[in-house]
Length: 459
Image 1 (cartoon, rainbow, N blue to C red):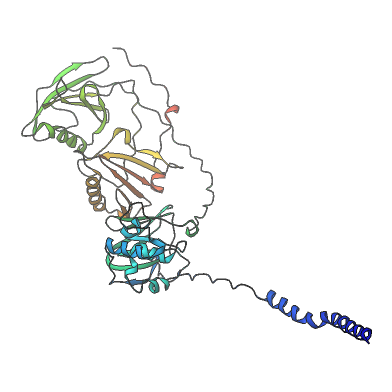
Image 2 (image 1 turned 180 degrees about the vertical axis):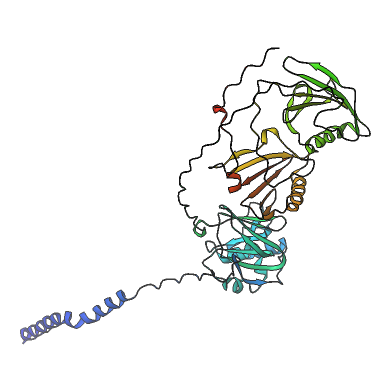
């Protein structure tokens, strides 16, 4: 009986074991199918604001005109209360909150936390800042303006773009929909911020098609070698009128080995010693003379065509004096008269300004389509004073301003393919003209192609 019961139990166990796969298989297969059918949901791409800017290059997607930046103490207290920024202070120049809290423009491109930008800029003092900025989700980079409003956007330069702003209350979230360059300058009359734009947002610069080869045969240049003529018997300098305040002594003629010269002693009434050099340089520049190099003994060289004037503003001991020594002579034989240097096209310098001899019409650029000059305006003027003088002068001649940044400005000619660039530094102005008008100007042959200079005539 006991054996019969054991056999019965064994048969039941074997039967259940055989049926188990058939009973359990659908349940496990259903779970496997369900697990393979589930896939993570892809995060949607942020929307693009392009096409909503009406050609301005930017869109103001949100703003709050009533917001004002908190004080430094309030900012520090807010940061200290947040465990994420407990060690960050707005009054520490090494802190990541130092610049955002003080700048009038901040970049937001999604690579950093939106909450962090709100905390560091002081926008947290607007209770609706989170909702306001979240409504401006965009695939384009954003510039958050604090205390400013956008006016115009310019991105014609290959490397730099400029967002012109004006002071305004509150803050504005600006989506940059135009061409994105590597650096963005935000400026009103002064520079507000310079922002390095993310590499992923930069607008690709199309590769220009290759230019067809242009074979140009410049006309042969034959330098002129003319023996220096004798200085005429005259009582006043040739090609130069002294300022009205100045009087010259009787001329003194001297014979040289290759040329002769005439000299005068010049004194100027009611002109201080310090102002004497400025007065004389201004008169020379106005009459078309170009400043050359400074010679030994404090002598300054000025050139005009084949004439040279040497002026000494010091006495023999090297001290300033109230009288000048002025000597004039023709440039002598054996020295090639250089080819005419191109003058600026449709541009006159401000009155009293002149071009340095070493900065006359230097042609650069891949195809020689750029010519630049260096000028100064005595007395010594700093960069801001030079910018003011040239701005009024250039625009009075009809040039149209395209950009104006501290110490750099660009203009275009109203009717010709001509661009003007000016850069101002203390003491002088670098300026250049470019375009098809410049490329078409005649060019001289290189110096190596010029024939050797003949020997000076014997006397």
